[in-house]
Image 1 (spheres, rainbow over the protein chains, first blue to last red):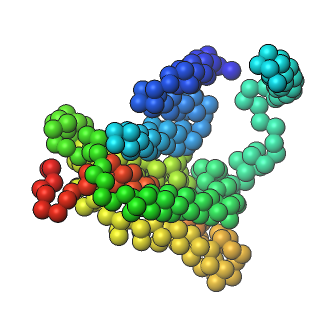
Image 2: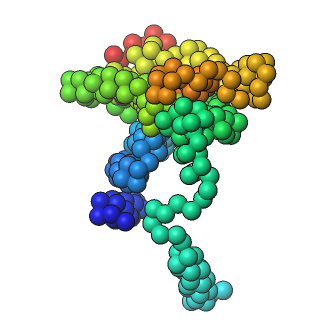
Image 3: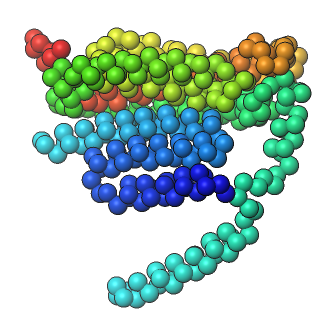
Length: 80
Length: 256
């Protein structure tokens, strides 16, 4: 395992732990976007560029967008 | 069972699981070592058999083309299912005014957000389409490029707002496009059957290695997948955008 790969893997473990430890979904989703980005780096340094690109699109755009929209609806339901 | 006994059982189970996992890790091949025969074979054969640069695409759209067709229909079913659930939910709560979540009001949309959002739309569209149409030459393909391209819808919602997004990508436009993309994959399969090959056999001329129009049916199938994925994800984004819209009552002027 190369140095860059090792650093990337440690980073992804750290960010993933933080995502789990933060309990507020509104903050969590932005950390999850960070996680998506770090995961993209991991896949890129492991020489899987196409998987990295999918992860970039799904992990940092699609999932956060869906979760944010869901949070808006839940918040709205609570206010009533 | 008392909490103490429960904790003991959990600890014992956890330790046993840890032992099994560690034993499994000990026998794993070294980092980055590939032991299967299939990948090496495909790497060696795909450039010769299919004149293709990207062996992964050769597996996805040619050697295992039928599997990818199933994969495409998983996405199709997922999009259809999500759309059905959300629309049914909305139909039951129509008289509720829904929050704008800052996604529609002009007050929260600064010039900077607008400018960077539009720049993002341009970058996403050009890079995504580039990625989507070069599956045989570079890493990427219809699925990856399609997902990236569809990101423009999310950016357009943030930069421009709900109404412009609905104008660019209304449901009566994205739905048929998605269906045509999904259908196209099967149509290619049926066409190869008619041409005398097996279902999804690569019957088109292969062309020269490294050229854009090469590798036979692979770019055609990939184009169908790209269309399906782009339209499907745009549909999903716009469904979620509908979730955050503000209901406008009769005679009430909507905020810009």
